[in-house]
Amino acid sequence: MVTFNLLINAVVTGILLGGFYAAVTIGVTIAFGMLDIVNIAHPVFIIMGSFVAYIVNRHFGFDPILTVIVAAPLFFLLGIAIFRFYYAAFESSGKGSLRGLAFFFGIMFVIEVTLLLAFGVDYRLVQTSYIGPNIGFAHIDLPLRMVVPFVGSMALVSGLYIFFGHTFIGRAIMAVAQDEFALSLMAVDTVAVKQLAFGVAIATAGIAGGFLIVIQPVDPSLGREYIGRVFAICVLGGLGSITGTVIAALILGVVETITSTIFGPSWAPAVSFAALLLTLAIRPSGIMGR
Amino acid sequence: MANSITIENLNAGYGAVRVLNGVSMRIGSGETVALLGTNGNGKSTIIKCIMGAVTPTAGRVTIEIDGHQYDPSAMKTKDIVNLGVVLVPEGRRLFPKLTVEENLLLGAYRRTARRTITRSLEYCYATFPRLRERRRQLSGSMSGGEQQMLALARGLMTAPKILIVDEPSVGLAPIMVREVIRKIGELKKEQQLTVLMAEQNFNQATKICERGYFIVHGQIAFVGNSHEELSNNELVRKIYLGAPVKN
Image 1 (cartoon, one colour):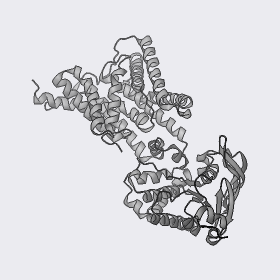
Image 2 (cartoon, chains in turn cyan, red):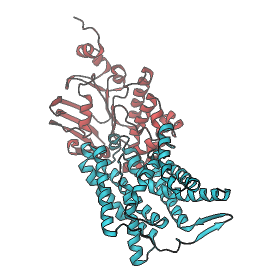
Image 3 (cartoon, rainbow over the protein chains, first blue to last red):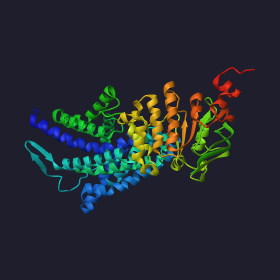
Image 4 (tube, rainbow over the protein chains, first blue to last red):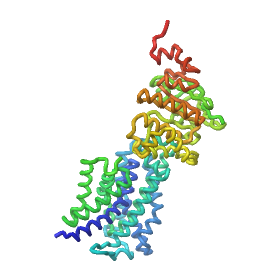
C-alpha cells in the first residue's frame, strides 16, 4: 500500500536525485546541445571522477566532493586534449557527426576496460561523515548523502548559468554551433571557444563523479546506466538549455522515484526512455527548446 | 586617421575555378564605395579576400588602419576584425536561437569594443528603435528587414573603422531596401566610417555612394563617380538595368 507519507518522501527524494541528475547531464547539454558533439562517453568520465574520489578518499581520507573540485582542472585539461584530437581528426574535415560518435564510443570502452583491469568488478564506496545520517522534519526523512550532492549540483549549474548567460565567452559558446563563420566575424577564435567549452563539459563530469560515489557505490560499468538517462534529460530539457536541463532532471528524478516506490525499482530505468519517446512525440524541441 | 582598402590586380578563385581576374579598386578613407554587379560575378569573392577567408592567387589587398598597413591574406578573419574591419555578411548570418540583445552583445566581443559597450548598445537602440522593443525576442523569429537591421547593428557593436556590407537588400521588400540603405548612409556619416557595400540594387546603392565599381565576369568593367555617370553608362544599362541600348 502506497501511503501519502511514502509519496511525499518519494517526491522529496526525487527532487534531490533530480538535482544530482542535472549535474550529471549539464556536460552533455554543453557538448551535445551547444557544440553538436555527441559525447556518448560522458557517463564514463563521471565514473572516472568517482574513482578519483575513491582513490584519494581511501588512501588519504579526503572528502570525495572536495577532491573532485580540486581535480576539476585536470578533467578540464583532459577534455581539452580530447577535443584537440577530435577536432584535428574529424571535425576540421567535416566528418564530425558519425565518426565522432564512433570515436567517443571507443573512448568509452577504453576507459571502462582500463578501470575494470585496474579495480575489478567490485562496487567501491567512500567514507565520509555525511553518508550515514539523515536529517528529518515532520514526516520527511532527508538522507544527507543525497542532500550534499544536491546542494553541490545546484551550485554547479548556477555557476554555469551565470557563466553562459553573462560572460562574453559563455555567449560565444552558445552561438558557436549556430553559425561559426558569423562568430569569427565578431573576432572570436571559434576553435578555442569550442575547446574551452568541451573542457568545461568534461570538468563537470569529474565533479558529478564525486557526487555519484557519495550517493551510491560505483563500479566501472555503472556509466552505462546513465547514458540513456543523460541523453533523455538533455533532449527533454531542450538541447543546450541550462534551465531546461535542470527542470527536466528534476522531473525525471521525481517520476523515477515515484515509479520505483509504486512499481518497484526495476521499472525506474524505463522512465527515462518513456520520457524521451514522449518528448519526441509531443514536443521535440523540449521544455526550454528555442 | 586614414582607414582605407587598396586592391591591386587581384586574382582569386575556388580550386580550378577562377573568379577574379585582375581586379583593382580603392576604398579611400571616409568614402562609401559600391560594388555593383549581378549574381556570380565575384562581388562576394572580393569581400572574402578582404576578410582573409579566400587567399588570392595573384595581386594583393592592403588594409590601412590608422596609418598602419596590413595584408589580409596572411591573417585570420578574427584578427582582421580585431583591426576594426567588420563584415555584415550576405544572408545576415544572425545567431537565430539567441535573443536580439545577446546577438548585439556578441558583436562587442573584441576588447576594443567592450570598452564602449554601453554606449554602443544605447546608440544601436536609438538608431534602430525596433531592436529595443524586441531585445528579449529570439532573432530568428523576426522579419527579414528587422534581421537586416540587427545584422547592421551587430556589426556596429564591434566598433568598426571600416564597414563592409554584403548584399544588404537581398530578400527584403522594396520599402525595406530603401530604409536599410538609407540607414547605412546615415551611420557612415555619424560614425565617420569607411564603407564598402556590395549590392545588386543599383538605384538605391548609387544614391549613397561616392563611387561605384561595376564588376562583370570577375573584372571591373566600369567605374562611375556618381549616380548619373553609372546609370548613363551603356554597358551598365545593357547588362544591369535591362534598358535597350540606343544605336
